[in-house]
Length: 309
View (spheres, rainbow, N blue to C red):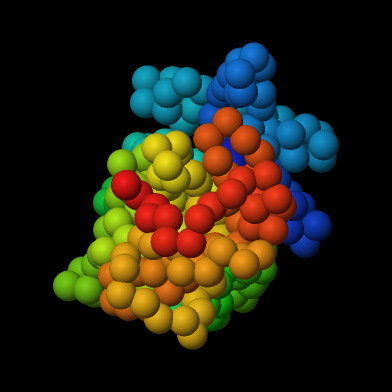
């Protein structure tokens, strides 16, 4: 198929790479403008742009879609289909209907669950055991279009949203190519979403970072996993912010939420349900991320110390 591709972050790169490797003709790529990154605010291109340049595919980076010449450019390329993967901009009807097969989106959830901006994080935050990728025919609603194909996968007990992000990007790429093959062969069946089961995945914010140790071990473990790699779950240690990057469940129990109940070459902290979590990786304010053993070599944490006070 002749394709115009629209995407921005690294999640979209495997889809673009797979389309090109599968012999489809990606004739143009639309992505968001370069943005300043880091302390030095170095102007940095999106990952999709870098991938497109590597494959000598023309790149367009309009600040806005509405009111721009994007529709005209797309029509000049005469694509069979427009593929949209985490582009980050709302598409007007003129683009949705500008190709014979319209716009097809790769969405990282089992629609209608987790429509919206952060489906991967919310699946982990909610402790879901299963997720997947939905290949969807886009309409003017927010992730409300007919589903063309679904690929499911289990979520590991200790899998973070960052881990799942990487896995789903590859699963999504394979599912996308499979869907295009099915479309070409007239084998695809569009399924309408049952709106009654819809759930929205709002944007993740720093306000979600503070850990409430009165919550259950499961809730806190899911918070730690779900907020990787941004904004990261945070508590305090002796008045200093402490990022918690990785935890696992333990068989130890206690009744003092937030208290350190084992500091012998490891850190085990009690939660509100009496169960405990072992902290594996953490990061004190102004310091690098490190494993607990390295952390304890330079920081003396007394038994009974309460986090979050």
